[in-house]
Structure formats: C-alpha cells, structure tokens
Length: 85
Image (tube, rainbow, N blue to C red):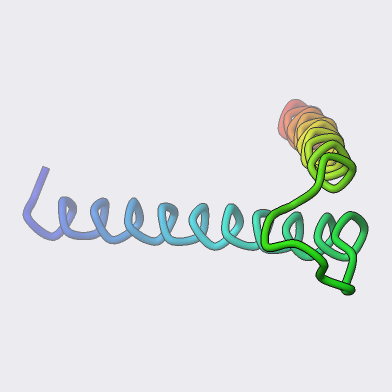
C-alpha cells in the first residue's frame, strides 16, 4: 500500500472513530437529560440521591440502553437487508 493510501486509510479510520464518539456522547447526553428530568426532583432536600431517585435512575438507564440496543439492531438488520438486495 502506498503512503497516500495509508494516510487516506488512517484519515477514514479517524473520521469513523470521531463519528462513533459523537454518537456515543449524544446517546449518553440524551440519557442523562431524560433520566434526570424524569427521576430527580428539583426540590433538593438532600445532597445525595434518595432511594426512590436511585431506583428510578437505574430503571431509566436500563430501559434507555435496552431501547437503544433494539433500535441499533433493527437499523443494522435493515442496512444488511438493503445491501443484500
């Protein structure tokens, strides 16, 4: 492989890594915003989360990742189906 080909391959790999990082960061930020709004009371009485907030947050994060995984699997399956056609 030529030096130009290696540089182009490295640039493409870096671009893909950056895109994946942006997607993961976006997913994380959306999850934090959603679960915070749903589970954490804005009337702060304690410096730490109470048991109800902790349980709600655990469930919210779990459901968020489960749904995200299902969406990713469906998307990957549809992409694979389109490539086969």
